[in-house]
Image (cartoon, rainbow, N blue to C red):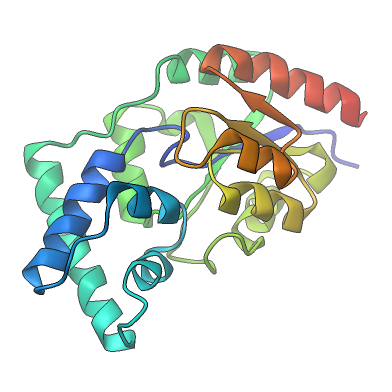
Amino acid sequence: MSDLKLVVFDCDGTLVDSQHMIMKAMDTSFKDRGLISPSLEEVRRIVGLSLFHAVGALHPEGNDDDITDLVEGYKGAFQELRKTENHEPLYEGTMEALDELAEAGYIMGVATGKSTRGLKNTLLQHDISHHFVTIQTADNHPSKPHPQMLETAIREAGAKPENTILIGDTSYDITMAQNAGVMGLGVSWGYHPPEELTELGAKAIAKTYKDVPNLVSQLFRKAG
């Protein structure tokens, strides 16, 4: 029986604040195709979904070819932004919380709607790749809230669902946690309202990263 304790993080809106990069790239892709750009609030609502599903939600009248074209435009715009801005800052206290969790003996992973390339760029930018024993992205799994990427992270890490916490900022994260039979820990600094996360089953809400290590410890203790 595995007694490993696994903590899996979402990326956008949880580890890093990427909304401005996402918004600019989405704005460019839509405008280049003569479409009305979505609002910031509309974009914030879809962060966390795999890209095709996210763009489809923003352009519901489009067919698959239209959505694919917008996705490619978004990817190109985002890659150009990385060359000039590369502005996906860590939230305050992220580094310290990761260090504290590692020192406490927890193993960690990432489950994100980002591409593998995008996630690796982000982790390398902030020099935090070494913290994560498993990395799951939209390239290899159905979109959240399908549980497959979280289930794969648990299997790769050698943990068990009951010994796993998923930390995320969106309804898709908390619902994915529920679907995978793991504990969901919401954060208040991301893209969906914390009360929505609580309603969907988040066991607790972290108000700052300083709260995260203690909340993780408390949840694991309560789970036995």
